[in-house]
Every structure is written in C-alpha cells, then in structure tokens.
Length: 148
Image (spheres, rainbow, N blue to C red):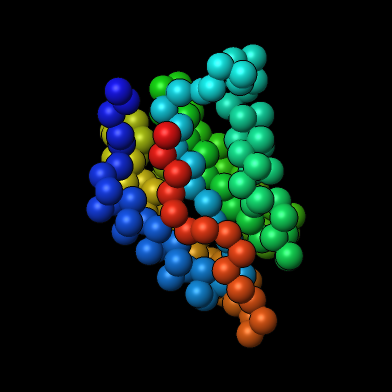
C-alpha cells in the first residue's frame, strides 16, 4: 500500500482553500497527486501524463480557459504546473517558473502540504486582481484534491 503524502485533514483544508479562492476569481484549480504512473503511461513524460490529466479532468474545458492543474508524480519526484490560455495571458512564464522553484524547495523537504498551500494561495492572490470572478461565473470543476 502506498503511503499518502497528505492527511485527510490536509486534503480537506486544501480543497476548502481552492473553493475560497474560486469564489474570488474566475480560475478553476485542480490538484492531482499520483504516487506512481499507470502501466499505460510508462513511455510518457511526466508532462505528457499531466496533459492527459488536464484534458481528462475537464480543466481544458472551462468557459473562459481559466483552468489550472498542479500534477505531482510522487514516485518520480516530479511535478507539472499546467494553465489554460485564459491564465497564461495574465500570468507570464516567469511567474510559473518562480512558483515551480518554491514548490521544488518545499517538496525536496517533503513539505507537500505547505508547498501546495502556499502555492495555491499565491496563485489565488494574483488571480483575484487579474481575473476577478464575474457575477455570471460558476464553479465548473470539483475542488477536491485527487490522491492516488
């Protein structure tokens, strides 16, 4: 059995954090924690696996193209940050590179919860001013963290 990197309480707190952020911005945030790749993914790069998850979870289908995926492949010590076109146009590549550096630092110390919490908070604070939630915006994707 695989040891989870987040407790149930941490999963709940992160899901609540995503929900509170999404009440202030039009962004839709998903987090997937995978301990190992699936057999069918053995020849794919972590980026390709994350892109598959991005599509499979509907992150690429938000009305305004404002989906974000944080994909963690624990067994390989890799992660990917993917953002749809509506997010990319307001958050430059330098922002994502900086965020990835902070996540790497936390993850290298096995501070998964704190790394995710701080990163999600940072994304939310910036997007609240750049992509504020409109009156017609709805929660298009679940806020729960997937850990498998």
